Structures are given as structure tokens and as C-alpha cells.
Amino acid sequence: MRGCLILLLVLPVIAGANPINRANAEKYHEFGSQAEFAGDYVLAEQNYSRALWNARMGNVPSSGISLVTYNLGRVKGYLCKYDEAEQLLLEALRLEEQDSGTKSGLTSMRLFELARLDAARDRFDQAYQYYSRAIPIVRKLDIESADPIGFANVLSDFAEVLESLGQDQAATEAIRESEHLRADHPGRQAEFTPRSYDCPAE
Image 1 (cartoon, rainbow, N blue to C red):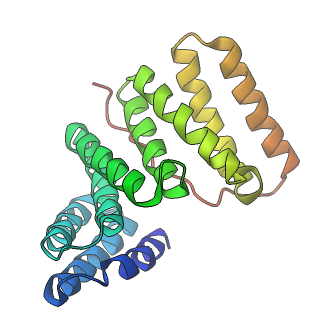
Image 2: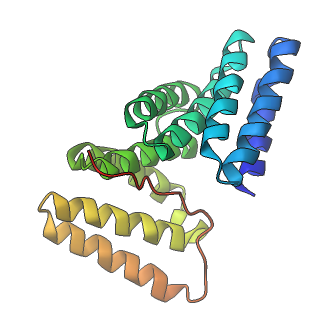
């Protein structure tokens, strides 16, 4: 389902590209989404890479490049190619900030992904910086109502980062808010659950 949603998002922003590259970018992005949904991250990486090359060659708008770059960065992270993943996610963040602004929901997605990647690498200072930028954005977008359990999960992850940095009081507050959100929404499931970067820490 997530792959289909990503594909629906990317199609409109690729529409202005060179017709041949546009068709190839759409095709390879769809293949990448299907492979990712099936858990074949090697194949997803190959197809997202081809989609990104075609999108760039076709002069796709920056919003489209941001999305394909973001997806490629994620799957490279799942394959433990952390340095490559970081560079792609940083590029996706830069492009998205230029396109939709520093306070958009799409920008927050890139920030959260970078936070999760850095946390997996035990780079807690950097993870803290990304979480600290992303969480206020989604609060203003009323994430507590739209996806309270998903946000509760984010707060739990953030609490782990805070604990690792010795910020015990802040961690306790994040855990308490997370627990309240779950208690206030019994039976509710997260609208979005990101895949973790579960490679061995560097």
C-alpha cells in the first residue's frame, strides 16, 4: 500500500519532464515501489536509481527529484549503505525545503528519516537536532489528531535519543506524552509505521 501511495505522489511532479525520460522515471519508480513493498530492497535500490537518473535527465521539477531521492536514500539505508543513504536524504531535504518550505509535512518526513538513520548509527546528537526540527512541524500540522499512535511512536523513539544524551527529564516527558496519546486512543493503530534501520551500529 505504501508503494502505491508513493507512486501516486510522484506522478504529477514528473509530468513536466521529457516524455521519454518521464515514462522511464515513472516505470522504474513503480518497479522500485513494488520491490520495496515486497521487501526486495536490492531490486528496489536498482529501480529507484534508474528512476532518479531518468528524472534528472528529464529535468523533472525539484519536488519530484526530492521524492525519488528520498525513496532511494531510505532503501540504501535498509541495505546498510549508511553514508550513501545520508547523502541522498540530505539532498532530498535540501530540495524539499526549497520546494515546499522548511515547515512542510514533506520536509518533516525527510527530517524524521535522517533522525532515524542517525539514531541507528548511534549519532545521537545529530538525531536530536533532526527530531527537534521535525516534531514542532508535525505538531503544527495537528499530528496528534491525524495520527496519534504514529506520533506516540515518534515520541518513544525521541525519548530513546534523549536518554542516550543524558536528558532524562526530557525523555520522561516524551514517554509520558506518548503513553497519554496511546491511552486516549484505545484500539487506534498508527497510520504510518516507518521501517527501522536495524543494521549493526557503526
